[in-house]
Figure 1 (tube, rainbow, N blue to C red):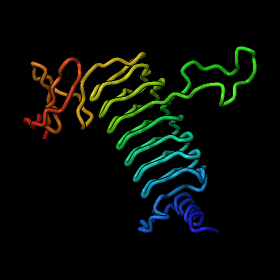
Figure 2: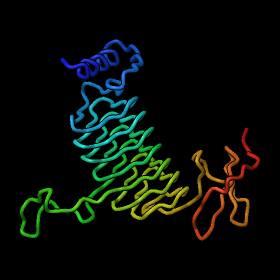
Figure 3: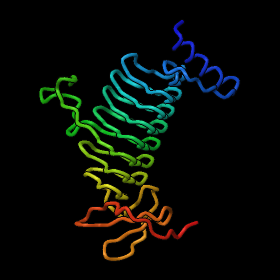
Figure 4: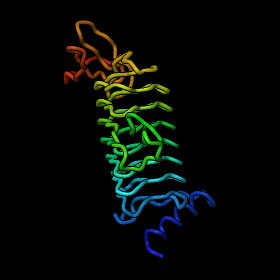
Length: 234
Protein backbone atom coordinates (compact mmCIF):
# COMPACT_ATOMS: atom_id res chain seq x y z
CA UNK A 1 0.00 0.00 0.00
CA UNK A 2 1.42 3.40 -0.94
CA UNK A 3 1.86 6.10 1.68
CA UNK A 4 -0.89 8.15 0.03
CA UNK A 5 -3.40 5.28 0.11
CA UNK A 6 -2.44 4.45 3.67
CA UNK A 7 -3.17 8.01 4.70
CA UNK A 8 -6.52 7.89 2.86
CA UNK A 9 -7.46 4.79 4.86
CA UNK A 10 -6.36 6.32 8.15
CA UNK A 11 -8.35 9.47 7.47
CA UNK A 12 -11.56 7.52 6.81
CA UNK A 13 -11.07 5.18 9.79
CA UNK A 14 -10.38 7.90 12.34
CA UNK A 15 -13.20 10.15 11.16
CA UNK A 16 -16.01 7.64 10.70
CA UNK A 17 -15.43 4.78 13.12
CA UNK A 18 -13.69 6.29 16.11
CA UNK A 19 -14.40 10.00 15.70
CA UNK A 20 -10.78 10.77 16.51
CA UNK A 21 -9.52 14.11 15.12
CA UNK A 22 -7.20 13.70 12.16
CA UNK A 23 -3.69 14.82 13.17
CA UNK A 24 -1.83 17.58 11.39
CA UNK A 25 0.96 16.26 9.18
CA UNK A 26 3.75 18.49 7.91
CA UNK A 27 4.96 16.31 5.03
CA UNK A 28 3.82 18.01 1.78
CA UNK A 29 3.22 14.71 -0.04
CA UNK A 30 0.47 13.67 2.41
CA UNK A 31 -0.74 17.05 3.60
CA UNK A 32 -3.95 16.85 1.54
CA UNK A 33 -6.59 14.70 3.26
CA UNK A 34 -8.88 12.59 1.08
CA UNK A 35 -11.71 10.44 2.44
CA UNK A 36 -11.52 6.81 1.35
CA UNK A 37 -14.95 7.02 -0.30
CA UNK A 38 -13.97 10.05 -2.40
CA UNK A 39 -13.09 9.51 -6.07
CA UNK A 40 -10.00 11.60 -6.81
CA UNK A 41 -8.40 10.95 -10.18
CA UNK A 42 -4.66 10.29 -10.08
CA UNK A 43 -4.18 12.90 -12.82
CA UNK A 44 -5.69 15.66 -10.66
CA UNK A 45 -3.68 17.96 -8.40
CA UNK A 46 -4.68 18.58 -4.78
CA UNK A 47 -2.87 21.29 -2.81
CA UNK A 48 -1.43 21.04 0.69
CA UNK A 49 -3.92 21.35 3.52
CA UNK A 50 -6.94 20.64 1.31
CA UNK A 51 -9.64 18.24 2.55
CA UNK A 52 -11.81 16.18 0.18
CA UNK A 53 -14.79 14.71 1.99
CA UNK A 54 -16.76 11.51 1.47
CA UNK A 55 -18.30 10.70 -1.92
CA UNK A 56 -16.81 13.78 -3.59
CA UNK A 57 -15.45 13.33 -7.12
CA UNK A 58 -12.46 15.22 -8.52
CA UNK A 59 -11.90 14.46 -12.20
CA UNK A 60 -8.74 14.19 -14.26
CA UNK A 61 -6.54 17.27 -14.70
CA UNK A 62 -8.54 19.27 -12.16
CA UNK A 63 -6.30 21.58 -10.13
CA UNK A 64 -7.31 22.38 -6.55
CA UNK A 65 -5.21 24.80 -4.53
CA UNK A 66 -4.07 24.80 -0.93
CA UNK A 67 -6.27 24.84 2.19
CA UNK A 68 -9.50 24.13 0.30
CA UNK A 69 -12.54 22.15 1.43
CA UNK A 70 -14.38 19.92 -1.06
CA UNK A 71 -17.62 18.85 0.61
CA UNK A 72 -19.48 15.56 0.68
CA UNK A 73 -20.82 14.56 -2.73
CA UNK A 74 -19.34 17.56 -4.53
CA UNK A 75 -18.26 17.21 -8.16
CA UNK A 76 -15.25 18.96 -9.72
CA UNK A 77 -15.02 18.37 -13.47
CA UNK A 78 -12.03 17.64 -15.71
CA UNK A 79 -9.61 20.53 -15.97
CA UNK A 80 -11.47 22.75 -13.48
CA UNK A 81 -9.12 25.15 -11.70
CA UNK A 82 -9.71 26.05 -8.06
CA UNK A 83 -7.53 28.56 -6.22
CA UNK A 84 -6.34 28.55 -2.63
CA UNK A 85 -8.63 28.69 0.43
CA UNK A 86 -11.82 27.89 -1.46
CA UNK A 87 -14.85 26.06 -0.10
CA UNK A 88 -17.00 23.89 -2.37
CA UNK A 89 -19.82 22.71 -0.16
CA UNK A 90 -21.84 19.49 -0.15
CA UNK A 91 -23.28 18.31 -3.47
CA UNK A 92 -22.13 21.35 -5.46
CA UNK A 93 -21.55 20.60 -9.17
CA UNK A 94 -18.63 22.49 -10.71
CA UNK A 95 -18.50 21.51 -14.37
CA UNK A 96 -15.56 22.13 -16.64
CA UNK A 97 -14.06 24.48 -17.72
CA UNK A 98 -14.93 26.51 -14.60
CA UNK A 99 -12.25 28.63 -12.92
CA UNK A 100 -12.44 29.67 -9.26
CA UNK A 101 -9.93 32.21 -8.01
CA UNK A 102 -8.65 32.37 -4.42
CA UNK A 103 -11.07 32.54 -1.50
CA UNK A 104 -14.23 31.54 -3.38
CA UNK A 105 -17.24 30.05 -1.55
CA UNK A 106 -19.60 27.70 -3.44
CA UNK A 107 -22.65 26.82 -1.36
CA UNK A 108 -24.46 23.50 -1.04
CA UNK A 109 -26.09 22.16 -4.23
CA UNK A 110 -24.84 25.03 -6.40
CA UNK A 111 -24.64 24.19 -10.13
CA UNK A 112 -22.21 25.65 -12.67
CA UNK A 113 -23.47 24.72 -16.15
CA UNK A 114 -21.22 24.31 -19.18
CA UNK A 115 -23.49 23.79 -22.22
CA UNK A 116 -24.97 26.99 -23.65
CA UNK A 117 -27.41 25.19 -25.97
CA UNK A 118 -27.84 21.69 -24.52
CA UNK A 119 -29.09 18.73 -26.50
CA UNK A 120 -28.72 15.00 -25.83
CA UNK A 121 -28.66 14.17 -29.56
CA UNK A 122 -27.50 15.73 -32.82
CA UNK A 123 -30.06 17.03 -35.37
CA UNK A 124 -29.85 13.55 -36.93
CA UNK A 125 -30.92 11.94 -33.67
CA UNK A 126 -27.51 10.47 -32.83
CA UNK A 127 -26.39 10.56 -29.21
CA UNK A 128 -23.93 13.40 -28.78
CA UNK A 129 -20.32 12.72 -27.86
CA UNK A 130 -17.83 15.08 -26.23
CA UNK A 131 -16.72 16.16 -29.72
CA UNK A 132 -20.21 17.34 -30.70
CA UNK A 133 -20.33 20.41 -28.47
CA UNK A 134 -18.05 23.06 -27.00
CA UNK A 135 -18.01 23.43 -23.23
CA UNK A 136 -18.26 26.97 -21.83
CA UNK A 137 -17.35 27.85 -18.28
CA UNK A 138 -18.09 29.97 -15.24
CA UNK A 139 -15.38 32.30 -13.93
CA UNK A 140 -15.60 33.21 -10.24
CA UNK A 141 -13.27 35.99 -9.15
CA UNK A 142 -11.41 36.35 -5.86
CA UNK A 143 -13.47 36.29 -2.68
CA UNK A 144 -16.87 35.87 -4.35
CA UNK A 145 -19.56 33.69 -2.74
CA UNK A 146 -22.38 31.68 -4.34
CA UNK A 147 -25.34 30.88 -2.09
CA UNK A 148 -27.00 27.50 -1.72
CA UNK A 149 -28.82 26.06 -4.74
CA UNK A 150 -27.89 28.96 -6.99
CA UNK A 151 -27.38 28.16 -10.68
CA UNK A 152 -24.70 29.93 -12.74
CA UNK A 153 -25.53 29.57 -16.45
CA UNK A 154 -22.31 29.61 -18.47
CA UNK A 155 -20.70 31.53 -20.02
CA UNK A 156 -20.78 33.99 -17.12
CA UNK A 157 -18.38 35.63 -14.68
CA UNK A 158 -18.90 36.51 -11.02
CA UNK A 159 -16.93 39.59 -9.92
CA UNK A 160 -14.52 40.01 -7.03
CA UNK A 161 -16.17 39.78 -3.59
CA UNK A 162 -19.62 39.58 -5.19
CA UNK A 163 -22.41 37.68 -3.42
CA UNK A 164 -25.02 35.54 -5.18
CA UNK A 165 -28.13 34.93 -3.07
CA UNK A 166 -29.40 31.43 -2.40
CA UNK A 167 -31.58 30.08 -5.20
CA UNK A 168 -30.62 32.76 -7.71
CA UNK A 169 -30.16 31.99 -11.42
CA UNK A 170 -27.19 33.93 -12.78
CA UNK A 171 -27.37 34.39 -16.56
CA UNK A 172 -25.34 37.61 -16.91
CA UNK A 173 -22.00 38.82 -15.59
CA UNK A 174 -22.01 40.02 -11.98
CA UNK A 175 -19.95 43.14 -11.13
CA UNK A 176 -17.41 43.30 -8.32
CA UNK A 177 -19.02 43.73 -4.86
CA UNK A 178 -22.57 43.22 -6.21
CA UNK A 179 -25.24 41.36 -4.24
CA UNK A 180 -27.52 39.71 -6.79
CA UNK A 181 -30.74 37.80 -6.17
CA UNK A 182 -33.74 36.41 -8.01
CA UNK A 183 -34.55 34.68 -11.29
CA UNK A 184 -32.88 35.97 -13.34
CA UNK A 185 -30.43 37.41 -10.83
CA UNK A 186 -30.27 41.21 -10.58
CA UNK A 187 -28.24 43.49 -8.37
CA UNK A 188 -30.14 44.51 -5.24
CA UNK A 189 -27.35 45.92 -3.05
CA UNK A 190 -23.63 46.45 -2.80
CA UNK A 191 -21.55 44.37 -0.37
CA UNK A 192 -17.99 44.69 0.92
CA UNK A 193 -15.30 42.13 1.59
CA UNK A 194 -17.06 41.16 4.83
CA UNK A 195 -20.13 40.12 2.83
CA UNK A 196 -22.61 42.45 4.56
CA UNK A 197 -24.62 45.12 2.69
CA UNK A 198 -22.93 48.52 2.56
CA UNK A 199 -24.34 51.70 4.06
CA UNK A 200 -25.16 54.40 1.51
CA UNK A 201 -23.53 57.67 2.59
CA UNK A 202 -24.73 59.61 -0.47
CA UNK A 203 -22.96 61.03 -3.53
CA UNK A 204 -21.84 57.58 -4.61
CA UNK A 205 -20.06 56.79 -1.34
CA UNK A 206 -20.62 53.60 0.64
CA UNK A 207 -19.21 52.25 3.89
CA UNK A 208 -19.02 48.72 5.26
CA UNK A 209 -20.76 48.72 8.67
CA UNK A 210 -18.54 45.89 9.89
CA UNK A 211 -15.04 46.98 8.79
CA UNK A 212 -15.44 50.71 8.16
CA UNK A 213 -13.90 50.31 4.69
CA UNK A 214 -15.05 52.94 2.20
CA UNK A 215 -16.28 52.32 -1.35
CA UNK A 216 -17.21 54.55 -4.27
CA UNK A 217 -19.72 53.91 -7.07
CA UNK A 218 -18.90 55.35 -10.49
CA UNK A 219 -20.87 54.54 -13.65
CA UNK A 220 -22.61 51.60 -12.00
CA UNK A 221 -19.41 49.98 -10.74
CA UNK A 222 -18.07 49.85 -7.19
CA UNK A 223 -14.44 50.13 -6.12
CA UNK A 224 -12.65 50.40 -2.79
CA UNK A 225 -11.52 53.95 -2.04
CA UNK A 226 -8.85 52.88 0.45
CA UNK A 227 -10.26 54.99 3.29
CA UNK A 228 -11.59 53.70 6.59
CA UNK A 229 -14.58 55.33 8.20
CA UNK A 230 -16.35 54.87 11.50
CA UNK A 231 -18.04 51.48 11.77
CA UNK A 232 -21.58 51.29 13.12
CA UNK A 233 -20.84 47.87 14.66
CA UNK A 234 -18.53 47.03 17.56
